[in-house]
View 1 (cartoon, rainbow, N blue to C red):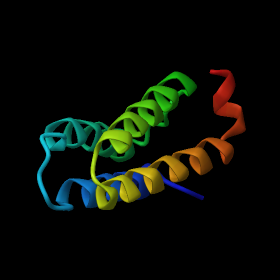
View 2 (cartoon, helix red, strand yellow):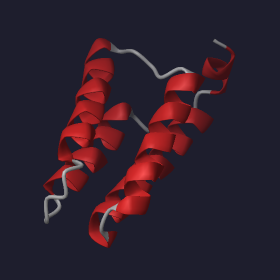
View 3 (cartoon, rainbow, N blue to C red):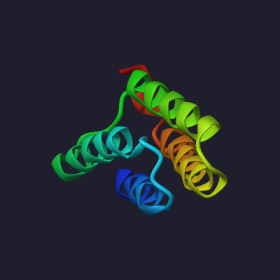
Length: 91
């Protein structure tokens, strides 16, 4: 089962990937939100998942290749996370 912790790890990898591009504060906020949710045992509702995946795609499309690779992996993990929680789609 995929967890938000795995997604968060990919975001941290993206933040740590040089060179700095100015996207780091936004990625840091996203990672902090995921960390809080994971720590509290919260899940992501469908709207939150959609917004997060969209934000990661936007950043990935405008950043350098190495960072984009981490962000695309995070998006893939979010898709797996959502697929493993079909009942959450109706909340």
